[in-house]
Image 1 (cartoon, rainbow, N blue to C red):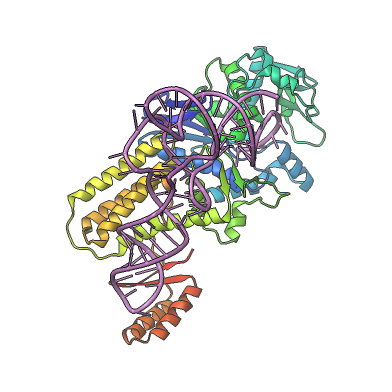
Image 2 (image 1 turned 45 degrees about the vertical axis):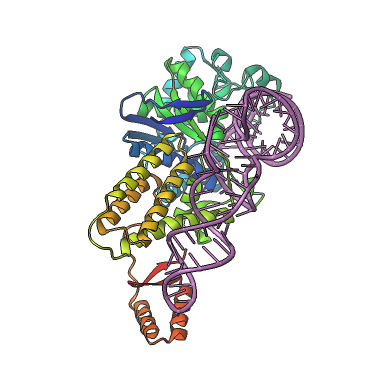
Length: 464
RNA sequence: GGCGCGGUACCCAAGUGGCUAAGGGAGAGGUCUGCAAAACCUCGAUUCGUCGGUUCGAGUCCGACCCGCGCCUCCA
């Protein structure tokens, strides 16, 4: 049984998908006005962990992630550069896909773009007008939240208090009530617009997720994810629109991940603690180490990014990598030990049970590390046979279907001159010329290679 | 003001009523090794922000307080 913390109920709930064996998942994707920062990727990596775990658990997952390619920021930036919306956003859409790949995010089944679903949104807005949930004002259309009594349930916001604490909206559009939100925005001078039956204009932000989610997954879906900051007003508004229009529940499980902070503070450009993935890659950070770092803290807990914490995650991941390397390269006696089977079964079961408990990654990783220590211990006592090693490796790679932190399987081949140096050093060691041997080792270390002398000969690995 | 999250060893971080408080990093000692690396073994919180309370029993429940943070406005 899987349990998730549902924001809607504020408690852990048993997960039951609408259809047996199948999960419909919608995740709020990027607004493509700039390069995403690592906080954005925390959310996407959490969603990736969720999805990979559901697949691991045996579910078929239908995943939709939207691309918001029209909003205030994209319009403004494109206008400033004199580019069309498409020209401007193309670059960032491409960057997002590139980043997703290096961070090993499983691709969604569909990446719908807002600009390609205007008719769906218009249809929904018209329906809301007809049903009386929305009204025209000055060429724009707004959703009237007082027509939807359940408004505020997700965010646990009380409308009376909202009104009391209301601030002046910076939006230039006129609304009947400050908290009503725009479904359709009237075209403004010099801005892109669509000529529709609602008049010239563009969609509001919230309507896109409602329309596209329904388009690909149906009016009721299993899971909808996003960052904690999307709860209000974005997701609250989505619920209002969708449920007012379709008259049925929009989402069964709302899962939100907490923020990433940097050195204990919110990331912001003015503080200079704002990192994109590209910034970190330039500093020589291995993206998979970053993935592991972002992955290894529970998704509902605030995560503090520091280079020290990233280094700890790197070292932790390295332990797993060393373990796999050892098993792959050591020469072992033929045969197998039935006890190893018990160890692998237990590791897999504990890992699975841990993650089934609202993605308790800490407990899951603890199961993996305990398994590693036990196998290492047996390895040092020469109790691991060839077939055991194969079984252990298969188990680790099974777990890695969820984590996706193991290196690509292809072995790197060193250039001939490096191999010659290693050979030369071996010769020097044999002749007990340790000064030369150490000099060569140091030279290769400078080049990023660590040599390890084992009973079975020399081996090397890359310094991270 | 309203809503919410967190405070567990040097650092990161599980644990939500009951055996000796997971796991990782860093560190110390040892084994192995020419040395190193990796690995293994050993050590490491009489204690869980503070103070009260409930209970046979609390990190875990209740109350108060202190500290840090987020949201209520675009934001993963």
